[in-house]
Length: 249
Image (cartoon, rainbow, N blue to C red; front, top):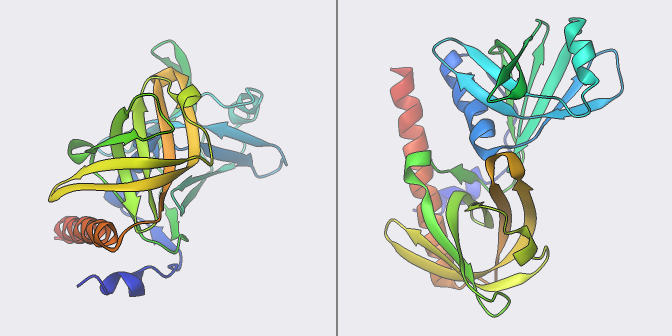
């Protein structure tokens, strides 16, 4: 049954999401994973960075974090049209905004609040399908081995046939090294634990939420572990398709 993955691993053409449910679900994925957003104003060459801090399907609103560098706010106040682009593990998510955003504050931090976009471009470009886990179903993981003094526990955010994204509480960035291979990665999958070596490809500590995000690539997987990963990705794909069908009813 895992052969279906090979056909679906190919890059897909862009999709245009138009329903509030699709749009809110996709933007919430960017929010929950704390993926950076790039904002470009149509008449300007400069790029600004922000994050989604809130997505509300019912009120059809979203909130963005303060832009970096902050002078982008001046263009926002002028009502200039802009484009927002984010990437979540190989998926490009982009939309245009011609309306103004209201400048406010949340928890003492500056935010920009506005309406959900009417259309969002969703483009899966990664060759390996990467399945995201729902927040209530995040898998416990442990990273250890000879390169670490003590194992580090965290959560699995998403997974593909080639790697996965992880979340750790607190700042562990000084304990890990990019490019390093850690020989004991354990994930408590629903049907049994898997153990393999991984290579650290991405590392970022987000101070405001006291969380470290990491991206790892599976290293020298055995056939057994590869089948476990494929089974789990396939299971997540089936659940996602069933969820989509339920939404269309």
